[in-house]
Image 1: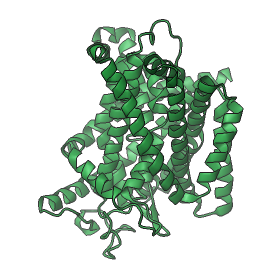
Image 2: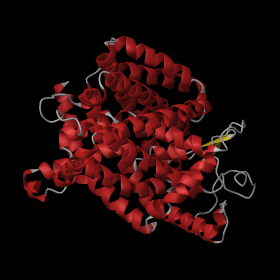
Image 3: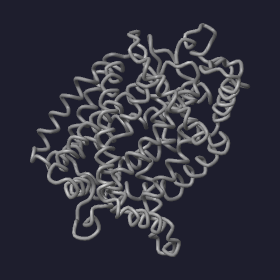
Image 4: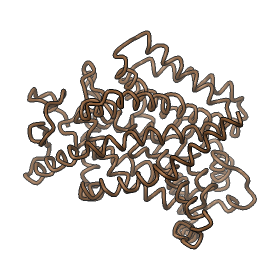
Length: 477
């Protein structure tokens, strides 16, 4: 086991230090410039589109609305990374890591827009619904089946197996600390709930996530705001610690500065997944009239996840006076200690419940990413899908019992490999997302409140399966 840990550490250091950090920042800036800062100039439009989607959820026709697709991707994003991951970032990289987490989220929103718009452009029909993602736009757009299969394998291992183990691991630790519940017993309970949902298909996943995500995300934010206002006099010190350590160039030569950046970016990417290629799998399921609409909504998901929810955790921990002195806690235990410091023993219970619901919603969201990519490789094979579901449940149980550091390190490796493949693809195909955005902008400037998409208007795109003149998407939001 020690040899495995050493190998994982070496691979992690190489991928993140020399490849991924540079690629994420450079491409995030490139996409931001090429889209003319879409994540900022269309910020108001994102909320308008999300609001329209919320009003059109219950069609009863087997389709997934834009709001439900947003909830599926947010369910996967908003998980233990928002609580345990941020605690780990602060312990490992100091308060300055939060600044770099913000940076990667702001520029990463443009990457998220590009990949999610491409997912919509190249989506395929799945009965009455749709499915798609990087594997689909790699195969159709780049005509590279092997690269598409490679991505499908990586995302299935990463999300359906490794990341789900991370979620269950953090959840069982939280419940053990809060209630003394045996980890194995908690793992069995989580496995039973996971089984009940994932055997119900994408519609059940959509309905579960659209309930869990909004309610408990809002509850978590409200508790954080209460703590911030309760300690408002300390907030200047919190911001001073974040910015001073983030921009402490004097420490660059000894590695502290670079370590802060790496920790912040890794934990930020794990949380918001911008550019990783995961959210496009959910974005593709949406029934919408123009690909850019879902691209904008998914960009809002990055903002919601990192700038809002992750920052809530950061403030809770940084306002906890013992987080860097007497407390030796890391990961979820630190978040529980911090919240109990602010609101009493109820803090342990509240964090445990939030972790349970966030982790559970992430598990079902992550599972769908795996399902979509298994279907890409093998088609609709019921026997194979049943085996896959059993393996997913098995990994949930494994994660409940294993050591947290092994799981987090393996998650970093899988995340890096996935992101590299996807970043290559969206760099090569990004021109179609840019042209689709120009098409959407022209229609909005012409006074059209509900732009529609015609592939013929996108230079070089050619024919794509779900965007013709049959009017199916005309009725969508």
